[in-house]
Length: 211
Image (cartoon, helix red, strand yellow):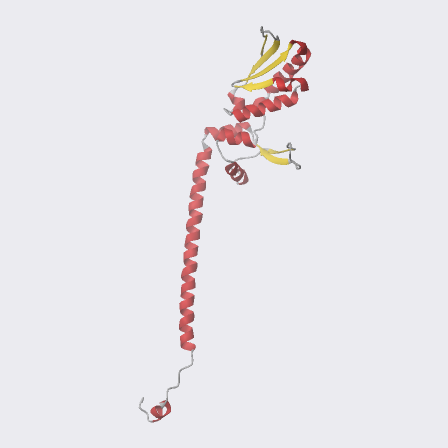
């Protein structure tokens, strides 16, 4: 942490802490999530004075708030000590891995993207709480480093193509089977139909002309 007093017309207390890429994983969404986490832990008066910038967390307060500034600074330093292990939220995972919400849901469901648990929160403006999966930052980092989303997309494309091929083959067999069934039914109907009795047939048959 570094701290200083500004020399402008409105003297203030300023403290800054480094925010390493191992914590943010290169994501501005993750940086904002860390900012929210820190704000939730510091004294109320300091919450709106915290900002997360590129590679740093800053706290700015007035000279009259020295006691709160010191308490908040200590809290921030403690929180940042373990911030790299902070679970990754769904929106953060999507930003880090550049994936869609649909892909995230699919890969969590089939086990390729592993959840370390769930979190339930009550969002402002919603009557019901929302439960969602959270992820281990190191596992997300491994997925990113291995470019696994690209591999998984290719696997999904191949699986979809195979499913469509099988469906097309099944549909073709069904159509062929229906066609054969209709032809057979028509043939059987012709064979089972009663023969027409022609005029004079009895005489023709009695004279043995067919023998």
